[in-house]
Amino acid sequence: MRLTFIHDHKFVFDNGHYYSSGKFSKQMLERYMVGPVSEIQFIGRVQENLYDISSLSVTSSDNIKVNPMKFLKRKSHFITKKRAIKSFLRNNISDKDVVVIRLPSEIGYIAAEIMEEGNIPYGIELVGDPWDALWFHGSLIGKLMAFTNKNKVKKSLKKSKNNIYVTREYLQKRYPSKGSNFIASNVFINQIRKDYQVYDRTVKKIGLIGSLDTKYKGIDTALKSLSIVESNFVFEIVGNGPKDKWQRKINKRGLKDKVQLKGTLKNGNMVNEWLSSLDLYIQPSYTEGLPRALIEAMSNGVPCLGSQAGGIPELLDKKYIHEIKDFKSFAKQIDKVLNNKNLREEMSLENILKANNYLSKNIQAERERFIKSIYEESQYYGT
Image 1 (cartoon, rainbow, N blue to C red):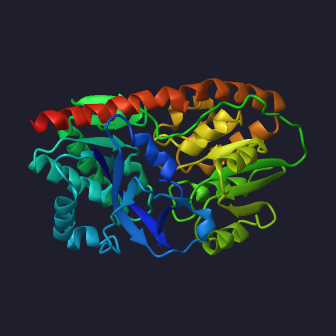
Image 2: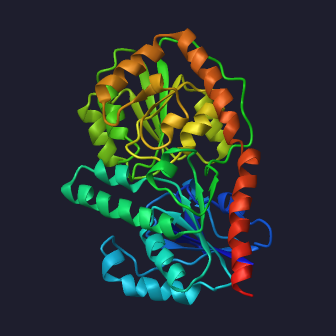
């Protein structure tokens, strides 16, 4: 049986293979190959390669085929080429497929309409809140789109019979559904490391993982906050994307000697080693579902601070949370944590305990039940 996964993600094609900037690696998609599912088709987009190919994750394999809409080259095409999108989906989705639509996603909204029109069983995987992402975009158009996209997600969830949320409460409250609902984060953690060391060194190391292509990880807020932090620190950002724009912002804030853009780390072991070297991990996002990088940091015992976006308050105590874009309060929190070794030890232990809830072995069973609910409905539909 084939599972068709639908999302707006942009892949890179090179030397006969499709690559992802991190979100959709082969290993990540293999988690959906459960029960009778033996192959996966990913319907998304493709982009020109602007990265070092060694920094990307391979997606395609013998059992995973990327099938991009090559005609989608700019955001306006979601509107002007909607008919072509519908035609592509109808021609490439079988009523025997297990269809999983990841939202928010412009292709996903259209796909959900087609599934409903054709009475074809499908499931929705809700991983984020488009309202926050667009409302805090900073433009009038972004704020207008926030209303539109919020309504699209609500409409899709209202009709879908099978849904999986990455949060335990946040997204469910904003986008409720009367269908069969499941909970499984899109985090991939195999073990909890309990060997984290809290040091009392002069220069503290702060870290953040986030793509430089997007605004919503709150790197702007981080730079504003760190420009007024009194503690001695270095700040390292791990993530792909164009560095020039951010380097200019770093220089403007007077942080040239304190901030390093590290690019992408090549594998999970390197990420974990880097996380373990931090005194503090920060997640000042403007929007989130349930941030994978934050949970990875917690699973390594790293003290963490974050914004109130999305599911972050489900992970961190409210005293470690700041309001979105409130860089002054965030700066005070950073100083307080960096100057208190005992507090960092307490935060480390709390994070290790919380991260146990997100071990892959505890989450995969729920994801399997979600996929099973779709293919069982599909089999019934086909009789």
